[in-house]
Length: 209
Image (cartoon, rainbow, N blue to C red; front, top):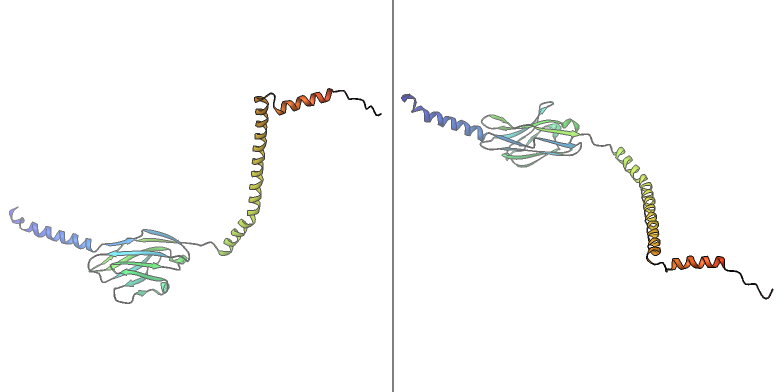
């Protein structure tokens, strides 16, 4: 065992160096997925550390395509299919790529690829482009809502009137009951007595007839 001891520090040093190398060549990518309508835009951020020559963004599915290649202080290379729809923010170690005027064919899996001592891939970003509602259908829905508005308002006022009427009738009935219960000599009782006497009173003959 003794002859092996001097080699242990060397092996540990090599292992640590390898782990550091793997760590410095890590590629982080955000977001893991994104959904946007046709004509909209999405952004993908590629972050790397360590020695870096440049960064690719590639569409891996459904058809492998190199979208862009970016390198600091050099004009970026953009695939013809994406030309005029790509914008960049940041530097190659922390690069955000924005793809605008999305098309349905842009749906797929996109990955950052860092060019270091070796080629290192980032995790994929799943991009889903949804079909937008046609303008004619949207206008039709708006027209239907506008035409239905007067009917809705009329029904609302009708039911509001019914509710107010029911409340008024209920309040009137309660007032009459309170009037008769609290004071037997109130105007309502006197009115009834007067009506009764008026019905039984004999008429006086007209002396001028």
